[in-house]
Length: 146
Length: 54
Image (cartoon, rainbow over all chains, first blue to last red; front, side, top):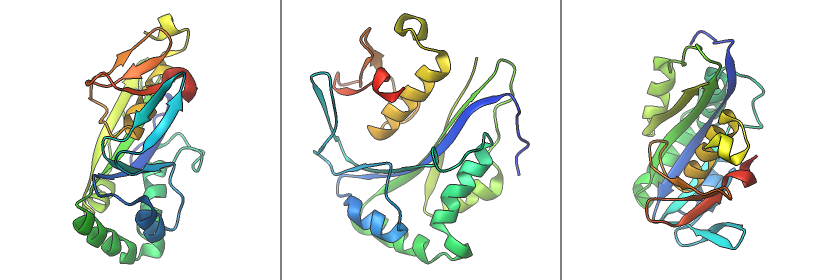
């Protein structure tokens, strides 16, 4: 467990799958939870002020934001792991690994953290990164301080 | 940039994180931010607006 930094202002984590052949409904069916954002390659995924954003590849994202009311990044990562390993089972993980091979998908975990001036950036606990690496999903950090 | 857009640095950081994440980019990918909040990727394609994420 990582020591909690009380000077944390904002944090959340997102599990993300990407690939040109990604079919969002298949990932949703395996994980049993609606994504925060999901689209196929070539789909318009965002509109605004006279612009459209078109998917360069397929994307499926589940964010802990809005699901976890905690400023400890560990808690956000453990929320995502509880979805990957419900009840400690790795059945969903195996299904996802098969799907990732079949659709040639990649996965990562994007972590956002923002702290007050002088705050110590969080360290990702080894057991958490190891659990995500089984997908495999690399952890990408986006850490800043005032 | 945050000052130019009239928002806090944490708001800007969070908005850019969400925009990059949803566009399939990594946190280290470079983007351009216009005065109206529009965010463009390295290919000059629009990928979101900072103000839409606040």
